Length: 225
Image (cartoon, rainbow, N blue to C red; front, side, top):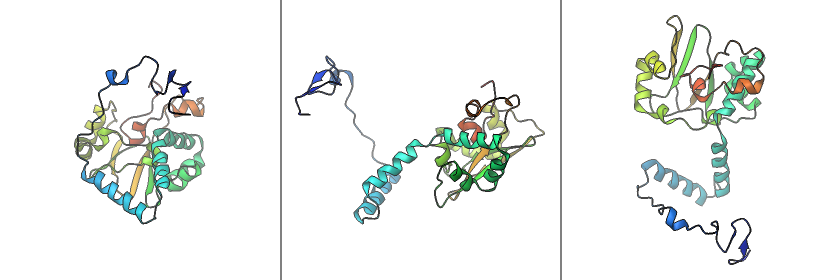
C-alpha cells in the first residue's frame, strides 16, 4: 500500500488514526526519563554480545520472550486439576515436577528443578523467596509485586500465619504451616487440597477454582470464590 493510499481499516487516507481523531491532542508524548537500571544494562550488554558472536539470533531471543510472555497461572491450574482427577499423575507430579510438566507440554528451564509440594489435611505449604524473587515462571507466569516485596519475603518466614491471615487465609492451629524458600536452582509450586463439594465438577469448573495465590500457598481454593 502506498503512503497516501486509503486504508480501509482506519477510515482515513495515509493515516493510522480514525477519521477526525487528533492523536497529539489526546496523548502526551512518551518520554523515558528514568535511567536504565544496572540489571537492564547488564541484560542489554549480554544480549548484544551473544548476538554479535552469533551464539543467538535476534529472532530466537524474540521467540523466547514471546514464550515467556505466554506463560500464566492457567498452566499451573491445569496441572493441579489433572492431579486432582488422576491419582497416578498426582504421584508423578510430586515425585518429579519437571517430568510431569513436560507431560502437559510445559517446558521448565533446563537448569531449574520444579518441586511440587502437596497440601494435606494436616500440612499447609506456603512459598517465598527470601533473597530475591525466584518463582516458577514457566507455570505461573510473572510473580506478583507483593511476592517480590521485602515485607513478604521477611515476614512470611517469621510469622507465616499472620501473613496468611492478611490474605484472608486462616489455617487451623492443628494444621502445620511449612514455609518453603525458593532458590535459583529449585522453584516450588503448591498442590492445594481439592475443595469438598466438587465431586461433580468437570475439569473446566475445577480450573476456575485454582488461582495463582493458591499455587503459592497464600490462599485456598474455594467454591465460594
